[in-house]
Amino acid sequence: MGLMRPMPHDADRLRAALLRPGGESSDFDLNPNVALPPGRSLRPAAVLVAIWADRLILTKRASHLKHHPGQIAFPGGKVDETDASHEDAALREAREEIGLPSKSVEILGRLPAHETVTGFAMTPVLGLVRDSFDPIPEAGEVEEVFTVPLRHVLDPANFTIERRLWRGEWRRFYTVPYGPYYIWGATARILRGLADRVT
Picture (cartoon, rainbow, N blue to C red):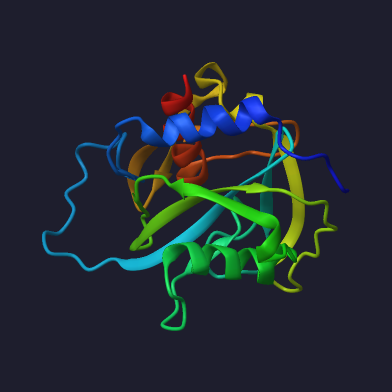
């Protein structure tokens, strides 16, 4: 599944997008009636928003996992004490989850943190994959590694807002489906923020 190098114009657009102003996001953005407890403590996490040629790398989580089973996600996870930075955590998780060598990734920068409903402050780290590689899904955690066209997730017109009943309340959330992949929740919210910055 080796792909070409990122297109120079895409890299330039992404670098420019990182310089544009934009605040933090959360799983509660579309649900203003949700009262979040003041002084809550969020656990640090990091994900890698990895651009490979003109495509975005995503994973489908294993269906037996306790948190977010079967959902579409970026490679990533909690920041460990041994991680020197959010960038190091995102690269380590990508190495573990999809077999992406850290040396193949050029870090462009960070997007604003995203608060998840599970109590994490998730920092998206934007990176360009400069080399071809064969993804290796982490056994037991990642069911599938796949890509979607970058242009699809950078077009705000491809996003919709849906709702579902969660813990007795209707919750609204972003989606950006692609083929058989239902991309929603935190992943779609982060991508929508990036799309807004690019456009």
